[in-house]
View 1 (spheres, rainbow, N blue to C red):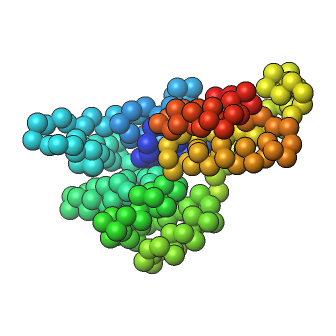
View 2: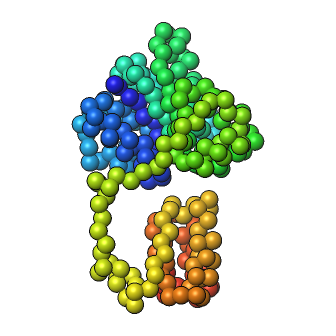
Length: 258
């Protein structure tokens, strides 16, 4: 098949899952076309059966914000028609499923019918989608997808509880391919961070407020009062500086590594 995948190109879960899925499909001899505003970070090690199409957002003085959704729709129209795609798989309800529906309707006017699979990942439902202003668009986008999947049972339940969804939502859990990530225990690395064999807590994120970085620090301080422990804060983002100052104020900086 010729499959179009629309995702964010970042290190976030949606971008990683979408990219790894596309690479696995390409290994099975499908032709996979990624459509995003930048090449996904995990695409740099594979090219067979994979094509990347960049969405270039026009910068018109008239617009206060660049019209990403319009640019994406136009790019999808072009890719579907001229690459003769069989299927669109979009990751994130807003804006990707919404744009996919618009694309599908325009193509139908030209006699081209393409199914859309929408995968829900989390923030598009639990944070963005719960905004009252966006709820109608989320309902519409999900209900007009041909197939809807979610990366966890909890996300499926949250979606059904918060929105008026008529479509079946299939759970396909997030995953790790242990053939690619077959790590063994590294004692030297453990001793580097915990020289006295303390327990190690790890937080990995993009350090946005929704990741509750400050709560991680508070929980660590409580655990530290009960046992020897170290904390590794892996990642970066707008809350990193706040977390670093919190560690200094709470007197635990010596046991936290960023």
